[in-house]
Image 1 (cartoon, helix red, strand yellow):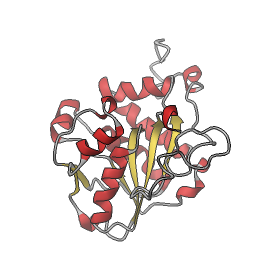
Image 2 (tube, rainbow, N blue to C red; image 1 turned 90 degrees about the vertical axis):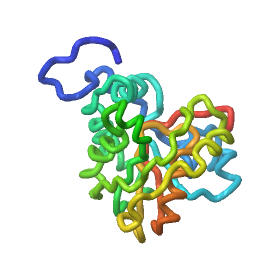
Image 3 (cartoon, rainbow, N blue to C red; image 1 turned 135 degrees about the vertical axis):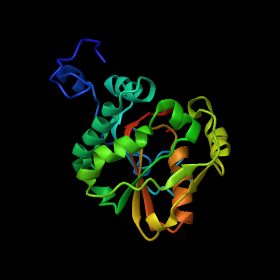
Image 4 (cartoon, rainbow, N blue to C red; image 1 turned 180 degrees about the horizontal axis):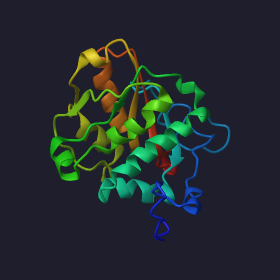
Length: 223
């Protein structure tokens, strides 16, 4: 983040100073999707309108400053260990989110096979592996992205939903049936990807689905 050289013996992808620039995602936020809120509201406008398949989303940090640099390091610069560290830090933040309970399994959000080949790994899977010991739950790589989708950051919410329709399926219903699951990803913006994944898991027989991500990108215009 600060572009200073790290000591060779330092295992962390962020120096001690930059760790301080990871901004914890703390209340007040929407009780469903973790969107930062102001005032006395309990839900953002979007979450007050209907019931969701992904019943709750929590994020360890806000997608700002050092969190952006960290995510870019494992999404665009091949630093796999940084993704596992993100999962560890999510585990260390779990005490802030007692409402999540304890999952039976962690399910990483899938990448399309072509994107996984290009990157060499699925960063959500590495994050889930880093989190697993803290959540005391195994990782189940049960979802598949059967159709390549356009990058979501440039799309409106409605276009995101259309883009993801039918794109994600559960490849192993036996791994999720009757279980309380956490979906794991790096960044949540609108929650559309988590919702599409939750739809697939519930259709395969999951008992419940919640989302836990490294960072939440605020959308202040929809509060």
